[in-house]
Image (tube, rainbow, N blue to C red; front, side, top):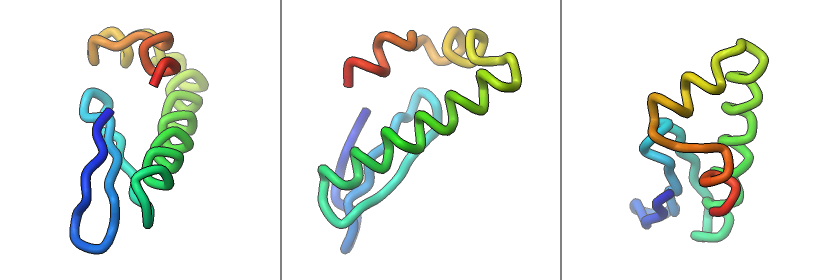
Length: 67
């Protein structure tokens, strides 16, 4: 995961999954990214594609949870 300042906001992203979010501070952006990732992964699980999405991205659920 990455976090950087972009103009007046902070942007946090997970490039491997192409998920990003923003906030007024770096911590807020990272918290928003964690929420966005949770929703994205839940949607993948509901669609039955979670394992394939993680495999394609080279990630594991454990690696995402450790950030």
